Length: 110
Image (cartoon, rainbow, N blue to C red; front, side, top):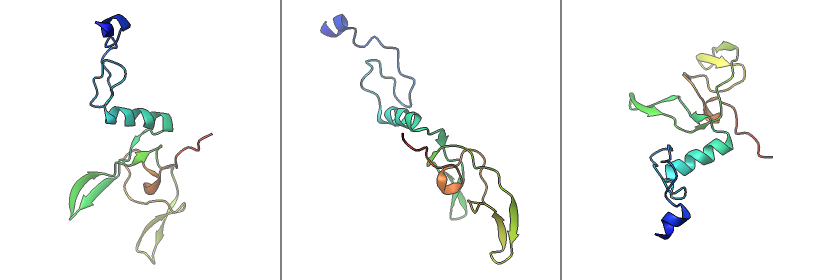
């Protein structure tokens, strides 16, 4: 009865990750993490494919703050592979990239 008088439970269902909260307070941990990421400037998760034992094992999944910037590439004959001039990760990056895979660093807090 008291909750009805105070208007508790009248919020529309939250569309956050695995949430559905209707009281505005009891959001799921995934939903809360999604909100914190949005505040911190996270655009999504790193899209670099991972491998284990020669088989696909999903993607990196670390927080990504943007796309890997373009760079010129040259052949490093000592290493036997192509190398970026900015010395960032030179593997396949289909979309967003975390800092470990050549993406931009996290924005500085003011």
